[in-house]
Image 1: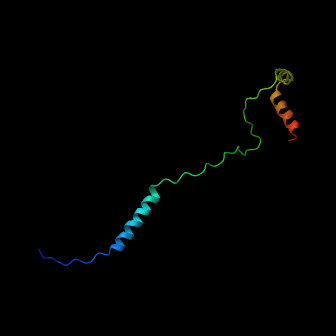
Image 2: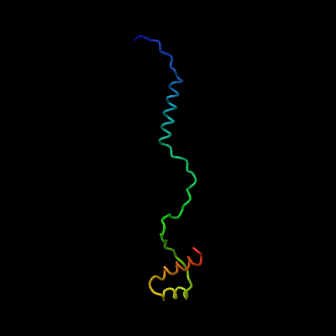
Image 3: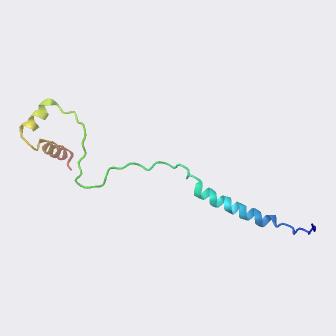
Length: 85
């Protein structure tokens, strides 16, 4: 076997390539740092109603129910009128 002289290695170029490969790998495999959670907002669909549980005095509820079907809509209308909406 003939002993050939080796070329000096350019370690800088090898390091740069390795570091670039590591940065690219980390960018693809790393999870982003958790940030603040975005604030939750109500849906912006007009006319959408939401089901809620509401405690109303029994006599008030009986008066609205006595007016027949649509009593829930009338309670909603009375609340709107009270709030000037």
